[in-house]
Amino acid sequence: MQLTNLKVSNEQVNFLQAVRQGLGQQQGLFFPTHWPKLDINGLLAMPLVERSSAILHALIGDELTAAEIKQMVTMAFTFIAPLVPVSDDISCLELFHGPTLAFKDFGARFMAQALVKAQSGKKTTIVTATSGDTGAAVAHAFYKQPGVQVVILFPKGKISPLQEKLFTTLGENITTLAVEGDFDQCQALVKQVFDHKALVEKLSITSANSINISRLFAQICYYFEAMAQVPVAKREQVVIAVPSGNFGNLTAGLIAKALGLPIKRMVAATNANDTVPRYWRSGQWLAKPTVATLSNAMDVAAPNNWPRVEALLTQGVIARSDIETMKVDEDDTVLSVRQLSQLGYLSEPHAGVAYKALKRSLQPGEYGIFLGTAHPAKFKEQVENILGTLIGLPETLARCASEQGLSKDIPANFFALEQELLKLEQV
Image (cartoon, rainbow, N blue to C red; front, side, top):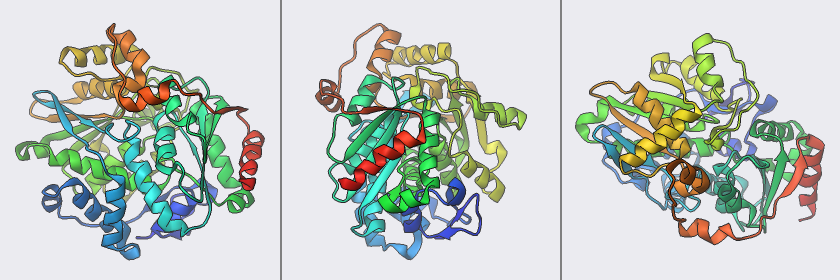
């Protein structure tokens, strides 16, 4: 498959080149211009690994053999993604059963396998920004992997303590930098890195954000897994609500629909950082300063993946009517988590945002799915404050909770980041 830079259309690369580069010229995102035709019913009858291997092989093409892709998927997708009923017409797709208890495990672990193929033994430096869950997923996917150095930027004091502990306590080949700013500033710094070609070449830098096409492709697979668990009679009436920050998750769902998965519509649910809902109504892109919320992993004012959504609309494989956008405020987020608890389902603020948006959107006869993107215990303090009750820690979190964080504070400027990156040259 050929991938085109959405900003510089004459820059075209294959899949492994895109994995290596992360971003194209002028910070452009790589994206396909054509989509394969799939046997949807046949795919939905398969188990997760076999189905995902077939989907990814159809997307990637002959660049990797079917056997190679199946091996990569087998190594990456070692956990379940169950569709758990919450009420008669609503279920949660639980994407937090991987090693770091968040949906990012799907993309990060597949990317780790793809990068091994792309680099062919060369040394690589991964520079990525996180608003919460990406950091842990990427760190654990590449931890102690020979020839790979990982640098993770995160907004100091703006992610949950347990989220932070999951990736700042590892050390070894994982460097974590606490940036004195918000996530959008972290993301801007990563983009600046890719503008410095000499630095990129010197350290062989790539990115592991959802801007990397391998992560995005992997995320498509769990939408098929969700539909495979929906009763056949309800598959034409499925509405999926996605807690949306950087919009990679929503993009993956829209690609699944473009490939033929019968999703009736997608609901992009944001918190107070509502750039997209406002743009969807007015046609004007006006990113305001980032606001800190309970659903901190979604505290993104300038979502990086939105150009890919626009590309799908321009290609005509997705219609405007396929997308609904909705802002959910803090009071409704709290209310949503409490309502889920009353239904006997323990959740957290990000899924709470998606559940509230889904409830507003769902029409009679439709079947709703909202994405559970992180284990509630990753937001232990917030959930306990909302519900007024204690929740336990899974072993993964309990193990790292008392460990010492190893991150270094840096100001939100490129010079400080460049100095930290150059230190890796001696590693």
